[in-house]
Image 1 (cartoon, protein in one colour):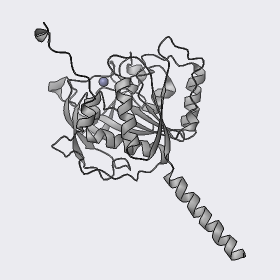
Image 2 (tube, rainbow, N blue to C red; image 1 turned 90 degrees about the vertical axis):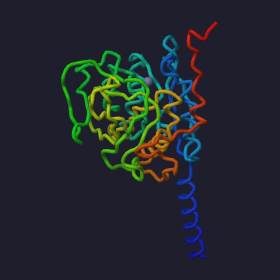
Image 3 (cartoon, rainbow, N blue to C red; image 1 turned 180 degrees about the horizontal axis):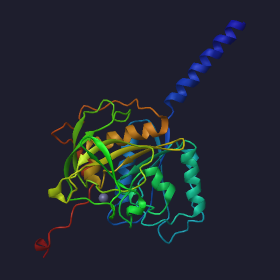
Image 4 (tube, rainbow, N blue to C red; image 1 turned 45 degrees about the vertical axis):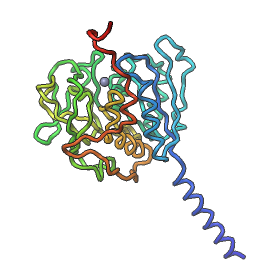
Length: 310
Ligand code: ZN
């Protein structure tokens, strides 16, 4: 009888472990700022679709109030989620202190954060947020925000010269290059082509506890710096894990296969510290872009040229 009970207990523990291993990872996509340049209302459905199609994530979208909205009652329970995907380009530091503190505690206690493209423009004066993202652009960031960070001859350079932060050229394809081994980039080619996007350059920030995973050459003939600019970074903040993804301006950029793959793998990593997803066969190569027509079709049709309007 005793042996039977022990066998039953062992089977129950194995079953529970399997169920827990298969339970979807709870993810919050946080968006909400009205911004005609970075359309969160276009980007969030794409992020949600990309995460859900892995069958690994249980995704909830939470939209923050707009500029004149009521922040006094806006207090998402961050600790209910293993990862927060921040698709949020807010032009100032409008969060009340209690909300900021709640987010800082979530991260310090082991939370997961994925920062998408222009979310690195947000909160220019919030010191702890800028520690989480490592570097950001625009919104009056300057040498007071921290140095510029870029790669020269395969080495990360910290440049303290004065100047504004954040620039990009026209949306063109560009080559991404892996510069450090990491579970997120394991199994990816060492170089690949990213579909038409803004290549962020001249980001500034504290850069503490930051490892750059991939860079792209900011070409001088496209208003660039001539340096290899960081495009994918991991950081630690207390016990928390951060992935900073500088690419992904619009649905066309987000349709690039590498974009979705990095989002999926990074969200798993910030939530669990591991990546067990496989790299898809249609991942772009060092010379050829690969993009999803279903996502590219979600881009708004541009207005016709003026000459064509009657
Ligand atoms: Zn952009």
